[in-house]
Amino acid sequence: MKLYHKIYQFSFISSFILLSLNVAEAQTSDAVPKAKRKGEKGYKKETIQQKLDKLPVGVTTPKASASLPGGNNISSVDDAKKFATETLPDLGLKLKKTIKDVKKEIKGLKKEFNGRDYEGIKVEKQLIRQGTGNNLTFLEFYTLKEFTQPNPYNRHLFWYDRKANRIVEGIGRDRATNDLMHGPYKKYLGDLVVEEGWYYLGAKDGRWELYDKNYNLLNKEYYERGFYQDSEISFYDENHTKIKEVKPKLYGKVTGEYLTFNESGTLAEQGMMDDSVKVGRWIEYYPTGNRRKKETQYGKDCYDNSFESYIVYEYDEKGKITFESPKIKKN
Image (tube, rainbow, N blue to C red; front, side, top):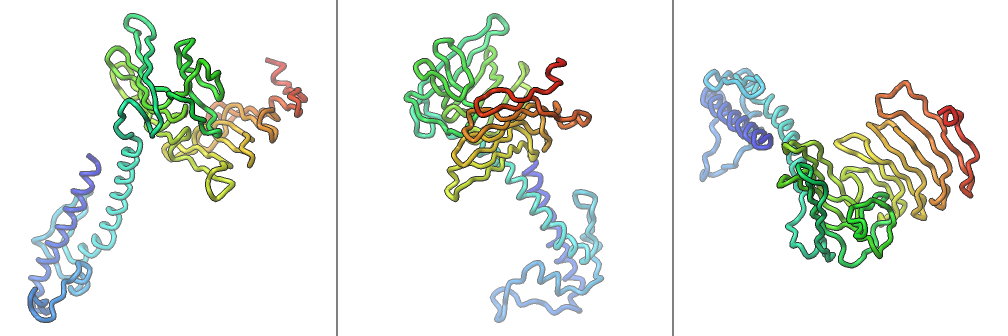
């Protein structure tokens, strides 16, 4: 509705300026020569700005005076010029921003799912029933029909554990009893959808929404193959195959899991950001990516200004602890 309102506002102001120009031209017919009419020799269509530039400054148009949205008035050609050169370009920018938001919404939606394959990869449907009575829930989702290697840079992969009959998270799982999630996912509380989203080779993808039992939207996030859709990702190579850094961005803020990788593809550092502030436990790894090098503790959120970060542990390359913070021993 906001988009339609902006378009209406833009159209209204444009029409009003044209009306102001016509009235002003009628009042100044003696001062300004009439333009050639269409079909006459020398006729050339004039733009709004050319019409504005030809009119003498100070001519009033009382009959065209009115209040525009936002409390602004156009009662003279000077006002019309001001709106033509200032207000309309600004409205254009706002319209572009609004359209961009709409395109983002559309991008978060996926193409119609045929139930057989997703993004060209074959899937099979799964159902899980959980709880009893009023807490009875159903999970409807899809998994890979044949295993396909996921993106090695994804740190959060989701699997369907057939043996335990539940969805689990892990970078690696026993493929004999675990299948990667792939395709649409929905969680039902009775007949009500309380969570829905998409997976791509085990990683969250597209738009994810969470609702309460009254179908009030609690949370909405956009992903792109495992990372927040607006994340800033840098690469080591021009072909964008070797990720160097993932700076998470959610609704314009640097929020979420921050990651850096070695050129070989192994994990170098990971931790959580909250509005550009480091929070929680951050971990640094040795170049192999398999051994921890150091753990550092930060505050619980971006407002925890009184917390002083400290090193919790340090390890050698064999995984042995070489330093332990005294604060750990006190606890």
